[in-house]
Length: 227
Image (tube, rainbow, N blue to C red; front, side, top):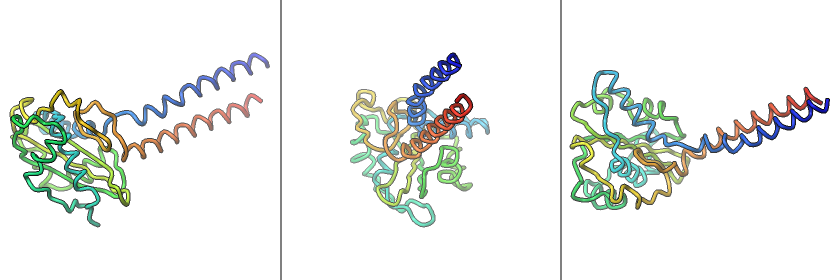
């Protein structure tokens, strides 16, 4: 009986040590990078080349939705169209894009939802909802892509943006000092090594809480079996 109690206590200690891992694993990662992978998988499925994941475009996509957040209509459309000058004077400047490398943005897709969606659902229900956006995403001339997402300040809406370019890979939208100076205090952008902050983090934290509850439930059942 004493041996069983000791083994049970060891198991409790192990589960408690796993709790921080469960929390960290759900908060870790970048759904913007996942969306780039989904976009490329869709392209390669029809024998189109993958798009290069450009941190510069990704950061600018995040700037786009940060500017337009809280402009979501009842039809889940972003009611906001920044002037072209904003891409250079605001987005590129905030990201630290080297101005001589500022290229041509040849396409963009934006969307919003009243709740956070995982990358596969965001791709099919927000960004690529019809033949027009599907055709844009599969355009043969595109070479680079960047994705940004952020949570709005009101009503809990989430905003996604995809920027596309047809410039030479790795020669345009270059971030100064490899993006080390980018100040990311909310949202996510693809090509970044930063973890997401705010927005989707709330959802993922909820998932981690479910994991904790499951572990504690297992502990309780095992407790009843041993005592």
